Every structure is written in structure tokens, then in C-alpha cells.
Amino acid sequence: MLAHNPKTARQVDEVAVEQAYEVVRSDLAALDVVELHKMRILSLSGAIIANLVLVAVLFVGWLWWRGYV
Image (cartoon, rainbow, N blue to C red):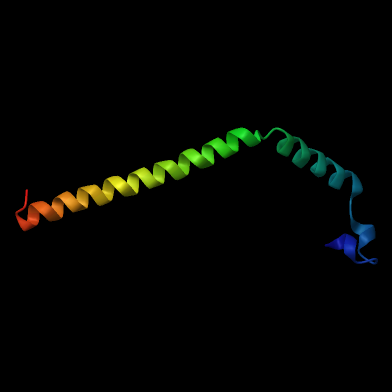
């Protein structure tokens, strides 16, 4: 934000900004995109399966409560 204003742009420590940029760039380069996609798919699949199990248990409970089981 300081760099956008000409008066305050002189207050920006360029060395610290460059070091922070390199840290962020190296962290982002270390990410494995394929692994992130795989984890997202597994997480979504787990949530769907958990919801289906919950619905099945509730349905069997309802059948038992109504006396059909």
C-alpha cells in the first residue's frame, strides 16, 4: 500500500520486500498441484460418503421406529 503513494513509496524497504517475495515464491513452487487436486477429491468423496451413511442410518432408524423392521 505504501508503494502506491509517491510520498510514502520511499518508506518501503526494498530488500525486505524482495526477501519476502522470494520466501513466498519458494513456498508456492514447492506445492504439488496434482497432490492438492487429489486431496480435494478425496475430501469431497469422504464428505459425500459420510452424508450417505448418515441418511441410511436415519432411514433405518425411521423404519425401526415405525415398526417396519
